[in-house]
Length: 317
Ligand SMILES: [Zn+2]
Image (cartoon, rainbow, N blue to C red; front, side, top):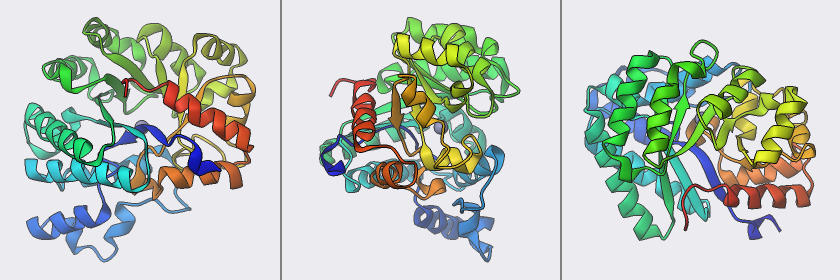
């Protein structure tokens, strides 16, 4: 039954999608220290004992510095589309942070954007899988850096359907980034914001009120504020929930007690996403099964979520 539902991933990071085999192959070729570790896989993939957002993000970030050539990013982007196609996806929104990639590799952010967007476009056409790209600005390099990161994204505006804000949510609040995101909205880009993952409901309020978020990355802690859930439901702001990632980062207490239950009961639009397929070691088809077997959604609830995911897509396809 679940195979008939649309399989749509709105929240997937390229950096957390790079195959373990690709990271390790490039590390071996370039002599990166990762290749010499006795258990390199544990540095790249979370296990069941994983807990805490920062440890989780380390596994995303470690791979970035290994891919020091533009060809490496072309390859990773093409493989990310292939992996989505192989899992049976109908539509994918893939997001990445050119500013962090440039910071970690010394490559020019504009060149990374060109390499990734060309590779995704080519592979998307070949596979017949529509893919929208989202450009990420990170919080923890501060407001001035965010302005520069946004200018870089806007210099390649036509390759993106939306922009996103990610990183240290607890220490770098939304008001630092209002100017940057106003520019993105003025340029006609959609806005999604990571919020309510490592900080509470007030961070989600800030994302919608100060940054104009149309969707929220994770947002599970919105379940702590009934008034916020009502507001999100009324305004049709979709939360990009990631069952496995949310339990690994500690944003959700467990599968059975995942906040998706309260969110659905309050009528908040929810989508199901992988976040980081390599780090979380998941595929979207598997997350749909987990929603039924371990989280305890009913088939009707899963169908609602699958259709809400499709409805919240930022591109027409
Ligand atoms: Zn994310």
